[in-house]
Image 1 (tube, rainbow, N blue to C red):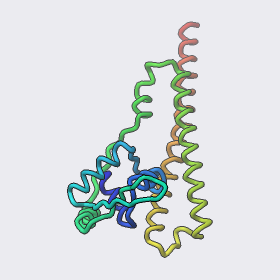
Image 2: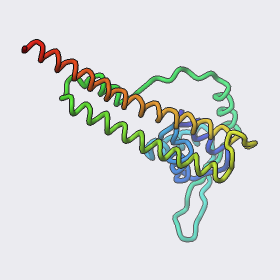
Image 3: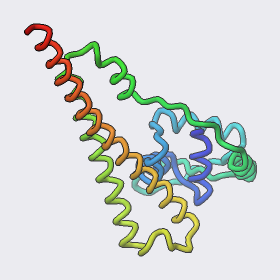
Image 4: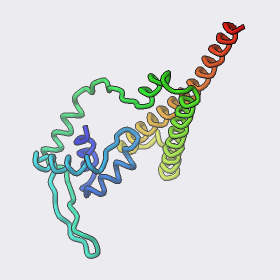
Amino acid sequence: MLRYAILELLHHKPLSGYDLRRRFGGSIVFFWKANHSQIYPELKRMENEGLLSAKRVPHEWRPTKKVYAITPKGQRDLEAWLRRRPKLQSVKDEMMLRCFAFHLVPADEADAQIRHHRDLHEERLRHYIAIRKDLERKHGRLLETADPILFWNVLTLRQAIAHERTYIAWCRWALRRHQAFRDRMERGHAHLAG
């Protein structure tokens, strides 16, 4: 999937590896994460497969950089991928895996981890909302745009915001349910002891 994210970004304009890395940290961070160690090997593979071309661009005050552009073969590959139906995404959520095993740690530790995770999602939500507000300042009513690129970017941003809100709500709910569980267990032990 990384290759299709790269092809889509290069579809707009040629970019250096550094520029691509920055885009992965910005415009598509809502739905796709890629590390430096993944991007450069994938660029090399894609260049070898003829999906993109690379040109060295000299700079006066910086080292020469390699700028990548999508090739006609890369464009065809991207369009073919877009026409295929996606599979249902598999879920890999470390927090849910931890939650599944929280019966093995003290209750306070489980709660602390859930609160920490909630805080991380709240921080990400604030970041996404700031991006949305910035886009609204620049472009006005986002869903009324005539720009197809902006329109689809806004839809992915809206999904990311909804995901963060849902995850935060789940963390709050889990903390309440865990407290109710603990209270019930405490009452049960008190009843047995009495």
